[in-house]
Image (cartoon, rainbow, N blue to C red; front, side):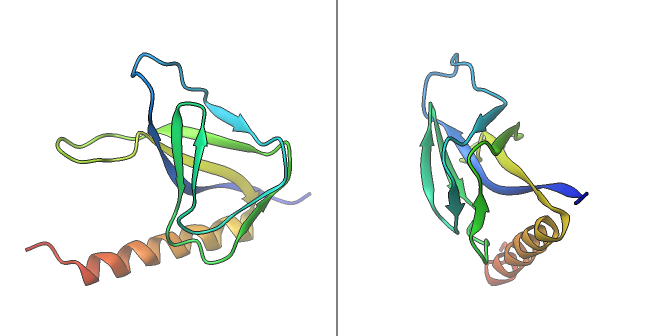
Length: 113
């Protein structure tokens, strides 16, 4: 049996009225491959994939995208949700490492004054 692990593959923002109920997950109805910086509409959400994805993430129909609330900072346009998927552990670890390295590279290129 293959071990699986959750990996964040993007962020989601609420487009609709704040009173709208948002599901905890979304089941894919067709096979999909997610690459860096793609945008999708899922109900009342805009989902954007992580800009640091190095290789397409192939998911089969029936796979789930899971939504987790993010803390929002004042006067920032932070995402409302992190979007994750369950993947084989090796693949999830690579996605996590790529995301961390990409974020670190960005911070070094854009130091806070």
